[in-house]
Image 1 (cartoon, one colour):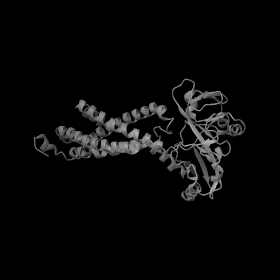
Image 2: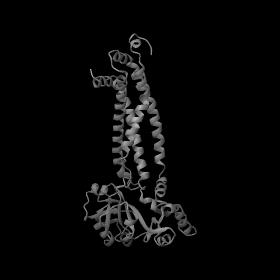
Image 3: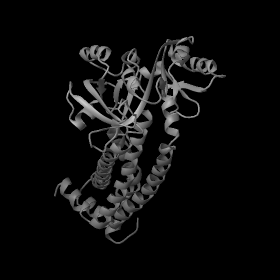
Image 4: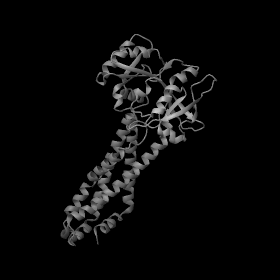
Length: 386
């Protein structure tokens, strides 16, 4: 009888108990996977290039409209290299209910402001010359089956001259990014095209994005911009790009903290439960451990049998929980992408889940392994105690 046969025979014992434990652990890892997806939203705007940018928006709301004329005043502030402005609105393609965020941005300086978005030279040239240009992320292009050069009809809540919210753009290219934090479902069109045809909120924007000369002066430059508009109307608030994104998300509640607290509580409960289960299973097999030792199996082999069972169950639960979290994230991403960007399970999350699963198996199974190691063979077979 070899090691693997022995291990398989031990795992088959008390199957109902094992399945119930697996299901509980899978639930805990499901919650952990959802926490990682929410954290991805909070980090979606973070990149190496974002350290060079400030965002200026209305003090009363991040969606407050402000005249685009203030861009010149921001650009005049010491430490600011360039300023662009933008608006955003939910959009839908044809009759597809899956909305996405359509962002109308300044034609000049947009691609230079976001160097983390890689766009081909032909697309850059068309962006400068074609007012109906649309640049979309790879996820959007794949979802709707768009082709470069295609005319894309979108439905928005921004009324144009004919009184409808229908807009037509031409897809001139897609962007790519080496930064995994950059969402793949962004869409950009030219502000001047939208502004010329819209019937309301002309010459208004909801955010002004400043490129800094020195990122080390971000807080100081932000203070200068806010001071510039301290006595004006509307009042503005300026912050580094990452902080600005988190401030906007805070308006919808601190989801990450809530899920983190729940996840910690669930994992702590699961750790206690799993430790009890593995201890009970080890105690039930004392005579088996003793017999194996009498037959000449080394102590380390007995411990490895117990440890393998614990590790396999934990990894299987982690795999199921993570897969379920990813499926839920994909399903709900389409529902929330008009409000937040980057809601997806991060690629680095798989490694983190594996690390947590390994640590959890070690912590919860330590006592059971000690029992297997210290079981006295002769005394146990004679009915003695440990």
